[in-house]
Image (cartoon, rainbow, N blue to C red; front, side, top):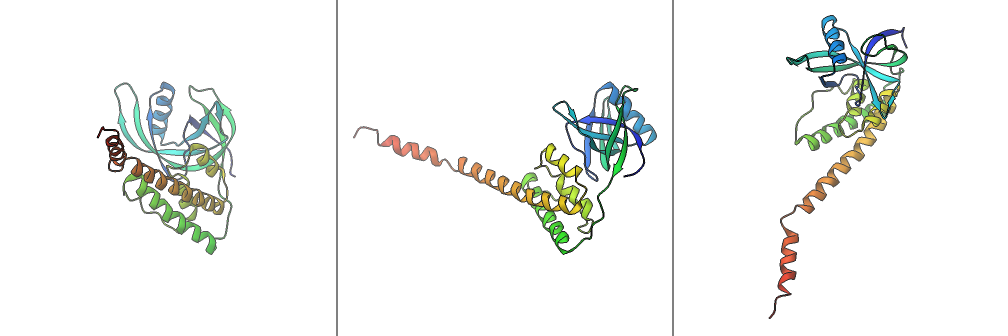
Length: 223
């Protein structure tokens, strides 16, 4: 961990992860103010998962990389990108929006042995397969398989994981554990997606039920 920093805080029902894009629609007045200040001074802000009335203590800073659209009433569509994880030390409410004193946190150093690299290759393979299943064949952006920490967050950020699951991956400080657990979980997600598609095919398949009903109905007709 490093020294304390004070940053604007944006509690949301999503989990931001390092390196991943975060599209946002800004409509509340306090957050219009906050985002405007971040744009003006090129400052990051923190996203923290807020669910069921509970604010998580670990979040991720994001930096605005594109102002997509600014509306006449001040609303904004922005694209941000996750940067650094942090732990909240204290909250401040002296501005219209929430602020926090935070310390940054990083993964602990780990030797990238053969098992860890194998998990990374397997994870990337599964990520590509799941992306094809969910996006009808679209390719994911290039990811360096040797950048194990970045890859672990890309796997953890896949659409098949819930916000609670992503929060668990965010809080892990072991790249090895994040790779291994997210890869195993993704393999299960892929099997569920394939099973769902198979069930849809059976249910929607070529009117077999209609033909069956027609044959049974013919048995009821008088001779």
